[in-house]
Image: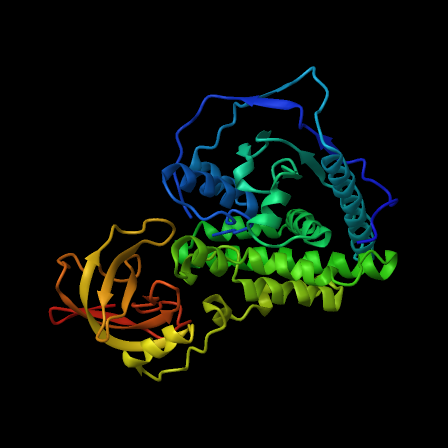
Length: 429
């Protein structure tokens, strides 16, 4: 990116020299993923799930819901150190970069708001290390960058960019700029009243339907990031060859499906909160192609079938279990399979996000697969034990250990082919 020498923002709050002290409050957990970026880490254990719950509220702007669930700490205190900030030359340059990108978003959104007869209120961007106090409560670096609607500030620990490069394999300055532009997109949603409308609507929805709204909100922020990128390039020639690919790589790396596959080995679309990799790339591209914030109305234009990774819900062909072996050999996924196997091992339920009963089936031919049966949407097989035979109809997802069968249930939203399990003559769906 051609950013050096450009104007820096006056809206940077540098709290890197401050430390946070607080007393821990009670908290609860929910699950995606946001994804943004929390969605970035994959959650294991109660402590990490609790952190994910906080990140979920912060990233989606659902402050009231977040506080009600997570017991977020409001009495944290930040104490400023008398010592000067210790930073490397690389970190110093990164601070300058963040300031320049924020300033560029200010120019873009001020002009676009003026065209609509509105005034753009610039957000603050807070730099911190380890933990920070916001109007949304105490936040930690593990949550990733976030936007707090309560104080209209973007928060980021610069160490996240190392994670973006090394863990999510999304290096480059435009990938870093995309993260800031996405969080500023949430600020746009706050100014336009979108965040409050989503928060209000979620109060009357169940978890699955509420997650759909969160996905739409996150994809809109991706689209708005694309709108900024186009105007930055048109007006100030900010982009260089390869920059767009960096942004698309970042959007793809933090998709809910990608993160779930990394953390759990299978995908649970009904627990998505930020959208799949394909969705995030798609809406970022829409914003870039149009340069028009009106093109980002994901709430009207969003195709509900996208929530299931753009799968064709009309497909009813039932592949046989023999085709799992072919799919495994050729690393194929998203195939509807009907078959049966013997329970080789039962596993503990996965209670992260949507709850899943898990067990290993040994198929004819020796291949072992994991079955992840959604017990929020279908009954649990309570009497299941090793040696039992289970018939199944569901979707196969490849992994190197043999693969996963999921979607073994009816889809109340009609977004996916209905699946099922059969055990001792009883169908579970």
